[in-house]
Picture 1: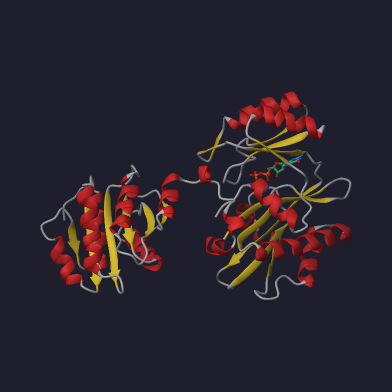
Picture 2: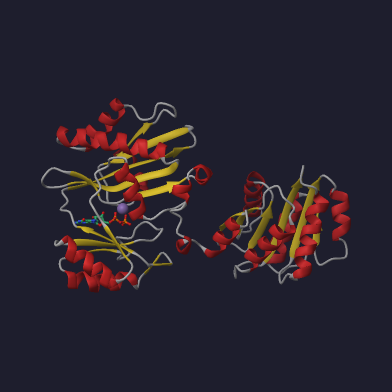
Length: 380
Ligand code: GDP
Ligand code: MN
């Protein structure tokens, strides 16, 4: 789950990190009032679930309440990476000597979290990684013990010329590691962490992604979800217990199980098609889930064909077939649908689909190739 910068700032402050105070404003007038209250030059920042706001014009300085009002109005009119700006963060602007990057994420290959840091902060870390990978320092965190003080010092001292700043950064790394683990985060990033001309080290941006699997035991964190900031299709899918991620292809995939869904998407790509989505309907054959899945998929204007790839284990194929038939009975599909049901009761399931608008396939290769052909409007 993604949260906004102002929420991430509040959380990081709770772990002791040096985050300057801020206000949140939904209107230009509220931003002007906050600027007046701070009584100094402020930075006004779009609160959207996207990075690179600075480059997109979503981060601006304003030196008076009037300027803050005008700047805020302009930012509220922006769409950043397609997302409307509904809320702003207003904070006293800081003078910057150096911009540093520090972030912790999960290194799946190493099977543990990794702290990454660079003197080249402020810009996209992906850019630094591509252009000059030697400028990124990495320290893996022990999954039980967390980041060790000697590791934090190694990173801190490598990031600053003055060891006094290096030791401050080391403390920040330890605090960030505690935040990462304490929040069940999958990403905790400060970019930029700045050194000011008067020698303070401050976190001027905060990005935290929370692991969805941890939210059941942390209702306080789950409450941070901003429904308005989410993709409406992905939100509806989540509310119905489906995992859906929209992609930009034209072959929609409905699959049970995340691994099978990934394999199906790979196969679509392999045969020259482009998947329109990732969709895991889980272990259930509940017709409502299938109806919702079809609804969501057909709301995507790029989709030209739909494929079902269902592996029946405990889930019975005839139950799924019944689910699909109920769903299309209520809401006749506008697009070609190719169905592969394999496993428990698959013969009966295929019999049920005979004589319907649904096309059957036996193997995974077949369902994928047929769906790609339908998407291209070519009969096979
Ligand atoms: P992002 O582009 O979405 O990552 O947004 P950031 O919050 O990181 O802001 C982008 C850039 O704006 C930073 O890298 C800084 O260079 C600049 N910036 C942000 N806050 C301040 C501030 O308080 N003072 C100054 N001078 N620049 C700032
Ligand atoms: Mn940033």
